[in-house]
Image (cartoon, rainbow, N blue to C red; front, top):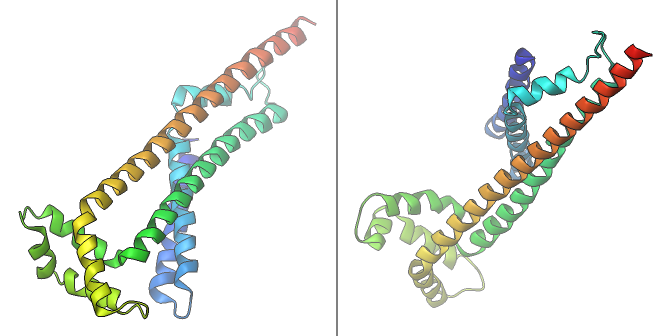
Length: 222
């Protein structure tokens, strides 16, 4: 089974890399479609990795449930165990889709006020140790790029663009703090969902193990 786990993770990585190569080398393909594919493949990779991190003892007990006391293999029990494993994946998929939904809302809200492409430069300016944040942004051209982006809005005048720029620079700590809170909340949600799913899986494996044991003993005695 470990080799199968490695194959599963490798395939997930391949599915993640393919859309990136499509984005880099294919012309005329919608950026948002490729972005959607990348997001879905990333979720798939995360789900597969978390699924493979199930404790070995719990996984072995699930495999043992497929074997009767007389050593024969039960297709029905195997089907039930695969269904239980599939439920782990479906629960994790649901969790990551919820996280992606909230992250997407945050990204679109940010994009309406500040171009996301400038975020790496802003983070770099905030982390370079400079005491004065605004000069660091000007050195990287972020200040002028943001003004040009804001001014390009047909509904905004030059004065509106300047006011918007000043407002962003004044509130950026709150924006960063909000981003950290959202990110931490997403991590906490994934962690909670993962361990709760594992707990449900462990309870089901143990319950089926006891049920199968009683059933097999009854058959052998009969």
